Length: 270
Image (tube, rainbow, N blue to C red; front, side):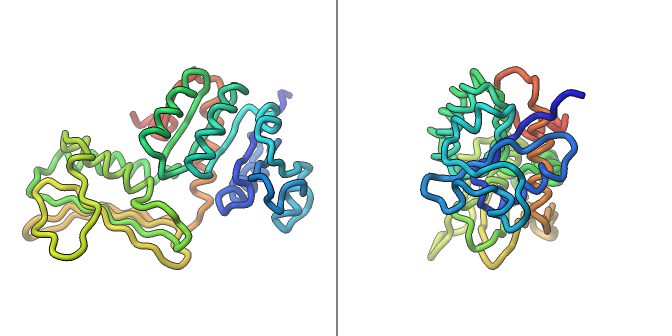
């Protein structure tokens, strides 16, 4: 029987890092071979299972990503833009599949990922859940069907520890709405309303961000016109949906040609 593909999880101590480790350990399709944390983190040197409050898993947390990636076929990465860009160079050297759930990436960050994708398979999405990616498709279709008499507003809610806004998922939805309308999101986006802003500009795609408590993720796309509203909604009640999607993307990426892919590729929705 062939050995299961090995996965390294970066940002192992984070909420998503721990959920990913639990998901991989529960899977019969892959194995955990590495856990990476930043230099100086208290978990470094500990068995990752013990650090998470459970039994040993036989994998020590390291602050040396190059050493960890060399043993893996897949790297799953939900960290920060700067860390993800640095990891992309190392995953390309290791010829590992790089699954990226990091959000808040700048245009410059994305350009650097494109360079890495010349030599590595990168699967990147602002949200890894099946439901959200179906919502993206529906948003594109509804936006294409309705004219600019329908205002589009994307409302998202997350926990109070989230550092970027709008969320990566909200931006995915905004891009889908813009594609459906045949416009550029950068020119149609309305992200800031404070004070006397004047009336809403026809055709704008608005964003509203809510931060509070332990909200995992809620996204609404509202199409509003005189006399009616249409609302498309996705609510995540368990972070495991993102981990399961990331693992699905990781396994899908094995054997693919170098390049940039997303969850619509993984789910066959393109």
